[in-house]
Every structure is written in structure tokens, then in C-alpha cells.
Amino acid sequence: MSENLEVKLEVKELVKVFGSQPGKAIAMLEQGVSQERILGATGQTVAVNDVSFSVRNGEIFVLMGLSGSGKSTILRCINRLIEPTSGRIVVDGKDITFLPRRELRSVRQKQLGMVFQQFALLPQRTVLQNTVYGLEVRGVGKDDREKKARKTLNLVGLSGWENSYPDNLSGGMKQRVGLARALTNDPAILLMDEAFSALDPLIRQEMQDELLALQRHLNKTIVFITHDLQEALKLGDRIAFVREGTLVQVGTPREVIENPADDYVKRFIHAIVGEKGGATHVSLAVRPVG
Amino acid sequence: MYRLPLGQWVSQGVDWLLNHYGPGFDAFSGTAGMVIQGLRSVLTASPWWLIVLVIAILAWRSGGRKLTFGSILGLLLIYDLRLWSAFIDTLVLVLISAFVSIIIGIPLGILAAHGKYLRRVILPVLDIMQTMPSFVYLIPALMFFGLGTVPAVFATVVFAMPPVIRLTDLGIRQVPVDLVEVGEAFGSTPGQMLWKIELPLALPTIMAGVNQTMMLSLSMVVIAAMIGAGGFGQGVLSGISQMDIGKGFENGLAVVILAMILDRVTQGLTRTERR
Image (tube, each protein chain N blue to C red):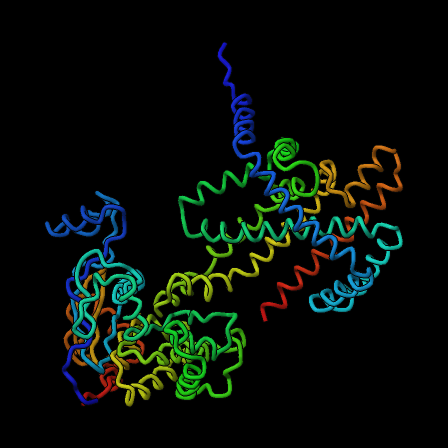
């Protein structure tokens, strides 16, 4: 992939505290009190603690971690489905952290697409009607939006299924609709929340391959969440390991395998090395750079 | 011993309302009465077989052959028992009450679903509406609206509207979180959220509320007849007062027939609307 160094998305010193008195928790964090003790003392849950990273144009950036590690919260802070407690979100050079509702909607409509773990298709709408949703909300005319939607449905291999209902589709097909729905809006950034985790292993690999194939000519900036290291290694240009709301290591697949920062990262790697019986195999699974 | 003069306050409040807004209530009652009377005249002027035909078509579309056949048979029985004009009166009462309940109830349900505090106010009021014995508010209703169908509709709405509000509220709050996130993530306005995501997904639940409202309004027909609403309720009442068991039974059975038709048709419409 051609490296374009332009930064598309920046997350700066992001903190998210769940609870009624986030100010207290932030003050304690600044004094270096642990998250566990903050929870005990104030009842505030620190879900994301001082997370910073930037994603370059055309890059697939994987957030990797166990469930409950805070990776989903980080993703939802990017499009402010969850409001950050402090820190900054910068999209395409523009700080959107304090954008008023109306402007935020416009950013969500045009710049940030999202794909969901459980597909999240509207059951009373057909495949085509689901796919046009983003453009419909933007007020694009019916003919225009359906033309675009048919094009992306074709792209994800769903031509001929336009008038089916989600209930009649398999998991893999549902997620193709989910992907087509996000792509039809033509956002520069795609947020993918465990997008393939609910699929059967074989279908999952197929979808991973297709995402990579699509990415070759779409060249989106993608933030991809997973708890599956093999998926992370296969898809990610860079991988960030998330534990208890902090980033423990950010690096290319090769870097994290050859040089795991701590036991948490090592445990992930040993889990798949043990499964496959050798480090060489793991490095083979890593996508060649360049 | 001190005794809280609660009853006194209430009657003073009613008097105050009557003294200050009496003409307003009269005017409202007059207009509402005209609307109700208008619908009744249209239905009375229509040939009876046309009404049977319309109901049969609705039954066909929502339920199929069995329901159509049953509806026609039931309506023919009502016609044969010389209860047709009572049937029209009761139908008008139920339809108007359901209409008013829906027009007021669905927006209130939507508001309750979105506002935690508003729900805290609305829910106890609904409890009062559903459990306060209806005779208690029947008398003030008479004082405000006079005898006839208008106070009957009022009393029926008070009793029958809560399910629409409750089930609209429930239906909207039950919309899966990730579908709400879809709406948000794609930049929907609150209005788009409501019309494109929340209401379509809540519709089956809302329709269950509408169905409940119709059933509850039918259970009010006898009480409605006490304040001059006419219909099957009047037949039941005069059956009781004349010790005419047969007459009471015929009118009661007619209520059951109407209830079954309305119930099956509204349930069927919900199912067909999903696809």
C-alpha cells in the first residue's frame, strides 16, 4: 500500500469517566491514583485513561483488547456516540470535540462511517432501504441515493438481494449490508466495531479478505476493533493494544510480535503461537508492508 | 380532631372551573357533539349491508377467510336481532374514543419515552386513570359536558387511553441500543430518529396498545349508557331494570361480537404492516 503520511484522525489525551462526578475522578487521575482506587473511593469508572493516537490516511488502525478493556468506548468517543470527558478528537484537521449538535451531525453524515458488531440493520427495511439510510438522512434524492446504494451493494457482492429483508440473510450477508450502508455515504473514515466477531470463522476470513481487497482501491482510513489477534495481524497496518482503558503498545504487526511491550501483549501472542506451533507461522500471517 | 378537607377542595375546584370556564366547556361539548353526531348520521344513512361489506373487506385483508366469515355472520346476527342502530351508536363511541386516545396517547407516550422526569409524572397519573372508579369522574363529567355522548367519550378515554401511552413508551424504549446508535452514527436529526427508527420499530407494540384501548372502551359501554350514550349499553341497562334477561343477553352478546371483530382486525393489521 502506498504510504500517505497525512494524518486523518487524531485522538489526543482522551479520557472517559462513567459516573456522576467525572471531575473528581479526573483530579485523582492527575494525582496518579489508580483506576481501581478511584472506583472504590468515588464510584466513578474510568473507562478510557489518557489515550492518544493518530491514524494516517488510508491506514487500517486496529484497537485490540479483551472485552471490557475500553476499546469500544474509545471508538464511540471518536464519533461522540459517547461524549469524551476530556481530551480532543480531531478529524481531518478539525477539532470536533465541542462541535454543536447540528455540525456534529454533518460530520457524522459525511466523514465518519460506522459498522456494528451485531450488524444493526433495520428489520422493517429491505437491503436497499437499509443501504440508502445515510444518504436519506442527508436529504439526497431517492433516485440518486438508490443509484449509489446499488453501486456499493454490487461492490460488496450483494447485487440481486436489494429487495430482501435482513431476516432472510445469513450473518455474513447482513454484515455486507452493514458495510455497504457505511460505504454508500462515502466517508473518509470507517469505524468498525468488532465488525466480524459475530461471524463464523470461515465467513470471518472471507470478510477479512474482502475488506482488504476493497481497501486496496477505496483507500479509507479505518479504525478496526477486535479481540482476535490473528484478525488484527491480518488487517492492521498498526495495532494498538488496549488494557484497562490505556494503550499499552502501538506498533506494526511485526513490531508487536517481535517486541511485545509487556505480559498482556505477550499473552495474546503466545495464545496464537501455541495454537499454530511456531513463531515463523505468525510472522507469515503478517501482511507484507509496502 | 382535624380532618383534611380534601373532598371540599375538589368540589370547590370543580365549581370554580364551572364558574370561570362554563361557556368554554359548553362550546367544546357542542362542537364535539356535532362531530360525533355527524359520524353517526353518515353511518346511519349508509345502507347496513355496505357497512357489513366494508368490515368484511377489512377482515379479509387482516385475517383471511375465517375472520371474514365470522364477522359477516356476527354482523348478520346483530342486524337480525334489530340491534343495528345500537350497533352504530356503540361503534361510533368506540371509534371516536380510540381516535382521541391515539391522538393524545401516542405523543404522550413518545414524550414519556424520551424524558425520564416526564415519565415519573405521567405513570402515576395513568395509574389513577385506570383505577379510580369511573363513577367518581362521571358526575363532574356530566356537569362539564352535559348528558349524551360527549361525557361518555370523555369517561371512556380516561379509562381506555393509558395502554396506548404505556405501550408507546415501552415500544420506543425497547428499540435495541445498536439501532439507536445507527441513527446517531449516521447523523439523524431527532425527528428522523423518531420517524425512521423509533416509531417503525415500536409500531407492533403501539398497535397492541391501540388494540387494548379498543377492548377497554368496549368494557365501558354500559357505564357510558348511564350518562346517555345509547348503544348496546342502553340495551343491557334496560334489560337489567326490566328484569329482561333475554334482552340483556342479546345486547351483551352483540358487545362480544363487536369486540372480537375489532380485536382480530386490529391484531391482523399489525401483522400485515410488518411486511
